[in-house]
Length: 405
Image (cartoon, rainbow, N blue to C red):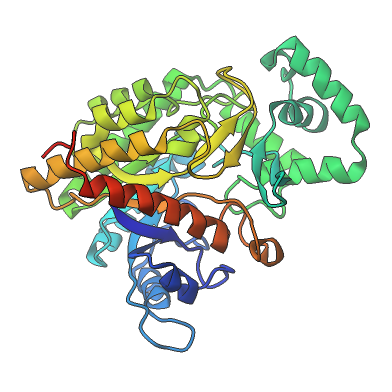
């Protein structure tokens, strides 16, 4: 596996120097300042490449921009409204521009409105560190009593509705504001200025869009962009829903192995691939991550390796970001399947036999607690996770028992 690290650009509180010290081999980044639906211009791509290529003192970093995460799919494309056709044309041009710059892997998602959802961005752990958490009851309190979404009560089991009402009654104004802020943080580019009215407007725009209709829109998008990616030498890889179950009345269509299999079959080209995120998919107990890697591995173009600890075994429920080897996913079994897949690719002569991975998320520990970097992306917490993953990777790579040749 090729070890990479996500970097949010010059404003990231984790520097290029620190990425270099972490010993990663490549960088995952994006042009976060470019509006969704617009073309990623060559000069902007080149600027980001140059920023990654040098350390603080001006010395070469030895690192390059290897994976895009994410080239966003606009809400207009997802809804097939407004300027969606223009946005697809712009997406194709962005892919061509990235390919011309030598970047071959592009991660994206097709989640309506919110890229990810958590109710707490700094949940205190017993050891004193913090992590991100999704609390189902707190989310219900937000949806029913703060957002006051029409029909929200019917989307939750009655015991959850009752507990949410009790919790909401105990919240002061600061806690209510913090909960709303945390949920809104997953809305791309709007975390600091999103209003409840703005979120309601986003939700209203989707109206009665069903999962089936959203999937049709997704496949229509893929039918347009995947052939362009294939010709340009780009590997597209869709990130799963996070969390992998419906929220806010919005449809979810990339939450299970069956979802991925259907989309891969619908547009059956190698460029149409998967970002296998063990944390997002692992929030559902019915997702078999090692099995998914074994069965769909030929189309896995990017790996997010992280773990979550679920509060219950219900399909929909609370969870928190656990240490990389301590959650519900058997990380050893998952990485063993990755190693087997890489061996198969190498034997077949595939140029992409080394799959890029990154230690996804991490708990804030030690000096992370003072730095307060991007939620989920601390320096030391991710380095700890990467070190643990490296240990598994090294052991499995050097052992020959049971590994496909």
